[in-house]
Length: 160
Length: 160
Image (tube, each protein chain N blue to C red):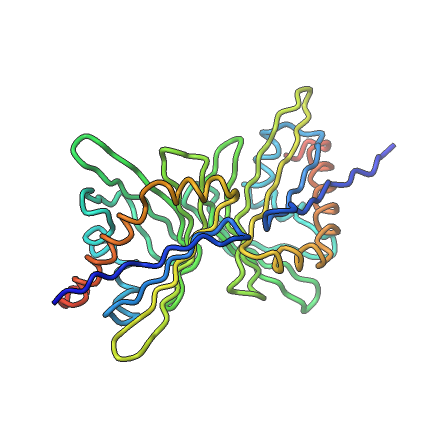
């Protein structure tokens, strides 16, 4: 029986921050690999309707990344830097090239819940409430939930 | 006659942001070089009492940097990523390694005022008001003002 798991997506009332929390049937090591290995990342990053292709990807402190998501002739490109890459913490920047002056600072933490389970704490910080609220209205929850469901499937299938 | 120029250092009332504004007797190209050429950067970055030494520095979109500032046996190391490097805009991350989990997202814009003058707009964004206010209480204005005075001297001396 597959249970539907939705990530908690929360807007901070006082900071231009989005926080996403989700528990996974996966170890911290598996979550870390899913976020740093480009071959794995392209397979789960949502939404399901888009195909991801890596342009460049160097997942170490001081490295950088770029990928293109497409659906037919529709293309969206994203790029950023890996500010910090540690087993329990990834800090990275994120720009959707459709808005090249926009940038978010993302923090991912992997909390070991024991028994092969992990709580992901993802935080996205931008410099205005307007930008933050535009992300929340963009339908991002579809990509987040479809992507994380695929990530968890990959963990269960032993692919991570 | 040398006039004393102080940078305006402002805390946003609603965002965990510090904004620094200062006019320079320098062109946008000179300010860009002062912030991207490591040989120039170590000569002006304040305060005067610290010596800067580059560890690594790659000032392009997706590059990264690290330097160490010292005074006798006292050492402070800093590192970050260059998220975006364009002639009129630099977006970078910044961590003081004394607080390795702290990170700021910095945006520098060079506004051409004409006649060889430029307004620098620097913004620093963190994820809490406590961290922002700790920076403001740290005596940062000394380093900011001493550093920018040296930068402007270098521009006047034709060193940029």
